[in-house]
Length: 74
Image 1 (cartoon, rainbow, N blue to C red):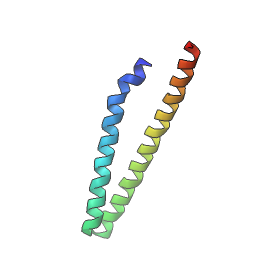
Image 2: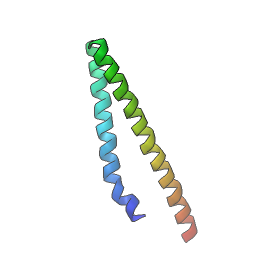
Image 3: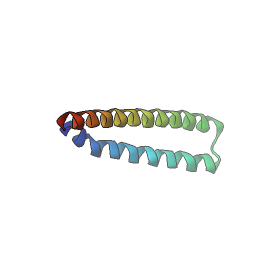
Image 4: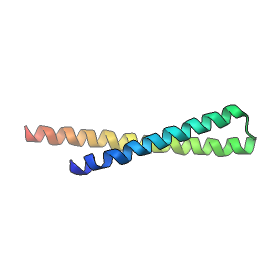
């Protein structure tokens, strides 16, 4: 449980950075960048989605573990 609590600031910072990157990509896409740059932006957006899925997966897993742990203490 303590490890989970200690990781919360890191996870929040990672989510914030991913949101900032997503906003930058959207701005650049709207700015009309070259097709080569759009390809790079597409790959970056794909990586961001993958990271968001991984973070979400870990959060759900940790929530299940916490619920299981809380139930065992009752």
